[in-house]
Image (tube, rainbow, N blue to C red; front, side, top):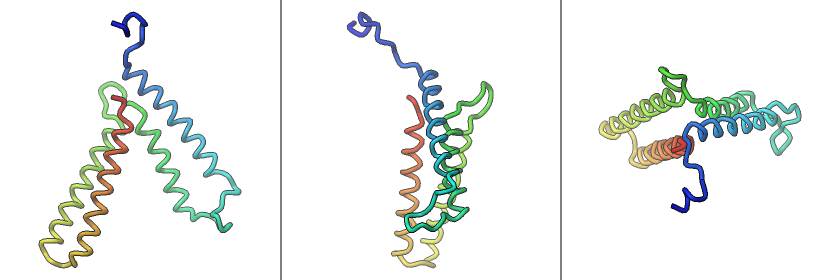
Length: 134
């Protein structure tokens, strides 16, 4: 009743997505400004490898792509990304289990790989949760 009396607006998922999209575009612009700076250098003064710059640029661009909702009747970039990442993680996990069964690697190496996969999956899930407005 208090919320109604104060006329507090409710959640608007479409508005939240649009606002998030605008913010990620601003963040990408800032990232691009840093990456395009000709004076950009590592702390020791040496330049970053072009492959590293490209990877960071792609990661920043991915944030923008995932914030952009799909047109009606299409599958969004974020949904396609989510599907493909889960598919890759499942395949890697299956391969890890096969390697464990084959006994081709030490338990130390298998455990290290398991932890890396778990971390990738947790990080991905957290990333996707942050992008979901509700």
